[in-house]
Length: 313
Length: 236
Image (cartoon, rainbow over all chains, first blue to last red; front, side):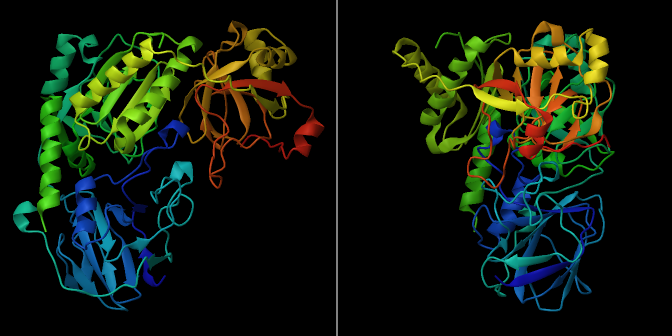
């Protein structure tokens, strides 16, 4: 396997990520996976890679690497004003790079927080428990037992890298990440919803929550006027992607990719699948409002998205 | 199935089955049956199964299995199981776990002794007297929540968790007990340490314990503990 990139600056957190570590939650292993699944899948799709190919998830930018072999790459997701040497690159558009080139990202531009870098033919990263996803607290994944990319680390290509014709996603189909905007997240209320008083439910729906800076791949903490509940806790049960928990301090936590497998905080509901990546691209300080939704709508939206994915290109 | 199951679609791809409203070992076999049923019902559409205490969370691919059908299919299959003769699975043997109980490795034995009004030797004995069930896996890879402890050992978790608990630490909290599979932060009271490796990521079957298993703790001497590869470390 040919070396294709060498990390010069790892940035705040750059991780090997694939579709996730499925079917291992019964052992206590987190499901992991890409924070923004839409951007991750398109990164591979634009390069004709297989669905589950490893990508680099670059959180908050500042990643820099040297190209070690001629290749084709693509960046999707957040816009960190990436450059190849001195040339500005557009996201959602494949580009060819030559040996000796430098690929660099600057910091967040209020247009998302997580970018995905993929290589035509796929990066090579060993799998453990059927995934390469990097989870530091479990010491699993990536090339160094759960460690995020380090300076000097060499990344290899799964198949011989090559340059190729360019492909892009039409601008009208690219998601817009605007961290100045109020984020509207649709959710399905759960069986513990009626255990909160009408007044507390109303408070939850009307508030513009602020994304706290204590937010990471495990979950996003929100801050606002606390939601009160007489519920101290429930018997620990499996936690879903997008679950909205209310801990004792009344400040909601939205559980995301690296969430613990089980937990005992009361829950108001669950964010629908197609809105997960919106929250994943949110910036600390950004405002969020929750909008009620139902299972059927959530399901239809998910099917539509899949149809679009299958029928494009 | 003995218990009355309730179903809740948490999202377009998650179905939660609740078997009981309180923790009891009698529903563990039902959760295990439902786990097997879910594997048959969903086949390749099954994404993940998370059993815990009184529930089973099923994650499925809604593109292969629409949510309303998922619930119906699961409900139907469990009802058939309800009426059909279920051959009881051969009882699994009790898993014995060696523990070195001593304040040198059981860093909370001394403080617990004061709080519980028992000598540390009595705490160790009491911990060995029962067989425990694994109610759930979670918190960390291979971490098994076991219970229920004798009421005499009931102690709420530490108000300030330790930043470092070593691998193999045997600990208690409320009416539960566990062994930390890897070094991690933790808020449970440490009463001893086992030389056994509970989670080996390089093995095809990495975990020693599973939900539904029966576990018994047996005291070993310091020499035996060291011989089996046990370490004696100071708190960091």
